[in-house]
Image 1 (cartoon, chains in turn green, orange):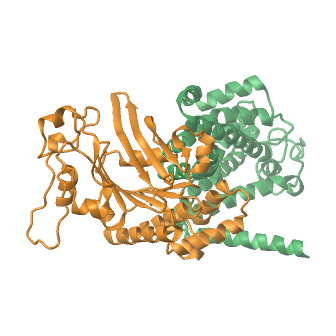
Image 2 (cartoon, one colour; image 1 turned 45 degrees about the vertical axis):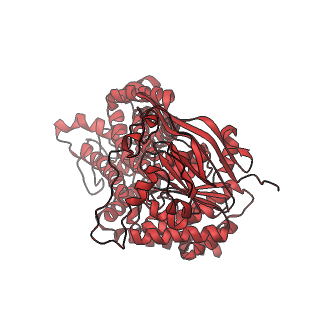
Image 3 (cartoon, chains in turn orange, yellow; image 1 turned 180 degrees about the vertical axis):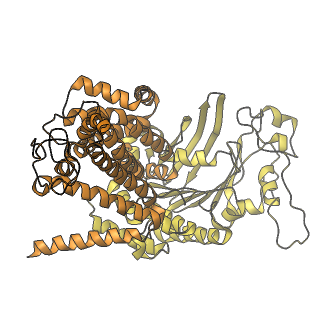
Length: 296
Length: 325
């Protein structure tokens, strides 16, 4: 069957690409390691319903007293409602990953085109957009996200939008600084001298040269967005109780910590840190790898 | 006798940079013509307006530059009044430009072939990608780059090779005029000679007119048919290179020729021109060169000399007496 073969070819190509990355020094290792963490967490979340030992939202799967410490049947213990922590850890990443993904997409879709256009055209447009972006930047990020999230109410998309608004200025700024440099460089002048239109220069010369920086910002932003999403859930602006979520568990576990129930707060915390770390590693690694001079 | 129109006609061109501190007249009243297949040298020191003149021909004078007066005609098309869209189809197709710094003139994220592909298909949209690559390969071969390197990135080439690629990009659409703006300034002397010889041989095989902008009089004397000498925005002398070398008439050109070291005379002191070029914000009245001229008369300080035909085809902007040989 040719389909399986092509799939196999794609897989082996991917593996060889990943292993060749490790030959590029610490930056390569960082990227591979980060990608491994992130992809493992994503896989775990996607298949969570099938691999988790209990239903993560069912209460009193363990008989009271709850919360009960880690045991043979409940390796990570249970929470106050008697839900299995292991199952909640396995399934609880989905909200955070979705929120981070949508917020980054949202930032990308708004910040990059605005940055490209405004800084390429320059003049009054650039000044106006700059003013708006700077006023967003003046707010402390988390406070602004909380305010917007509180205004819009609960839900994955609302959370993503409120986080996205906070990070648009950082995309805009990166894009702007790059565009201002690139539009003065001889190769864009050479393109103009060979008859290229403004649109061609913007899309074929400026954008591809800006893209590596944006990709790096996006991956680093993933980590930030996850932490902000956790923060929003922690103060009760996340999704409802019926969806397993690390941020929610963290928030509830805090109340149990004084009674000595460390397991309820520790494991979700570790997962959030791991996921953020994974994205941060990819971002840092990519920022070094995407320098075209490293290419053999 | 039928007089054929020239390929390029520049008529009393004046270009200003309107800056906040004042009006800078970078090119003043420059007129010349150029024939098909001719090789023209445009010589002048930094700030003499030679690059501005070159950029005016493709109407890409950088902001805040404005073409104030005069007009430029290529093949009967008036460049100064053509709409921008038409201009875009002229740039690259009819007139090509080779820039000074080959290290940064190619986009670092695009492969060499993609540069060609985009240029060719911008001007000839019906060309396929394969054909564009084939065309690119054949031109690369002509400039001495191995065609199989078409899939390499710019950083994988040396400065000299990149300038060869820039030349290949300039000639791939068979333009009628190539303007090379100091194409060898960023390169060392040996590569410089090779690139200049390449430009000349390309000119011969592709039968295109070439404008070579440079500050080095010796390289244009050697290779060009006609030479324009610019000083502080004005055209001071225009003649064939042989004529210019044998009978330089303008005092500036004479001093320039004297300041080229002569290999036959050992132990010579290099002849420099005293003083420095004028500030164009506040140029000297009359002839632009009089403060540095050893033959300056009272008249030179007050009036701007006209361009006079001293010998047939040899124009000089000077009040000095025309001593016929």
